[in-house]
Length: 144
Image 1: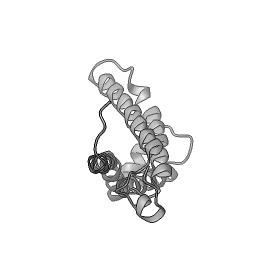
Image 2: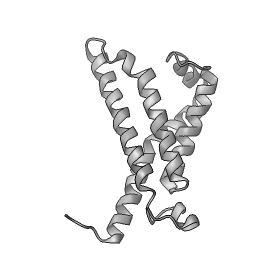
Image 3: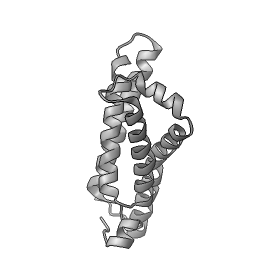
């Protein structure tokens, strides 16, 4: 079994968190900058709660959760939150269209699988922790 030196592991964990968090930070910021369009799109998803509530929940989870994972602060709950958010978003916004014929169905199917893959990565981060180069470790002494 290959064992990497601690500095390499630390660098990979940091890089992985930053790369992973980018999709959430950019999406949350985009929603924040386009409130009306985002609420309109969210309303089209058929969620079982008001679109305005879903909008603010998405902004908080994507932007707040993404930043928390990036900085490695409260990483476990943040990663679990983004995993749940990603599964819910995939279910309501991609799965219903994944069986449409043609390019639309194919792309929506890809997006649905992408969401499940991202959720899996988030759960892996939650299980593994932020790593040594994180605010969790600096503030709470949590290396794993």
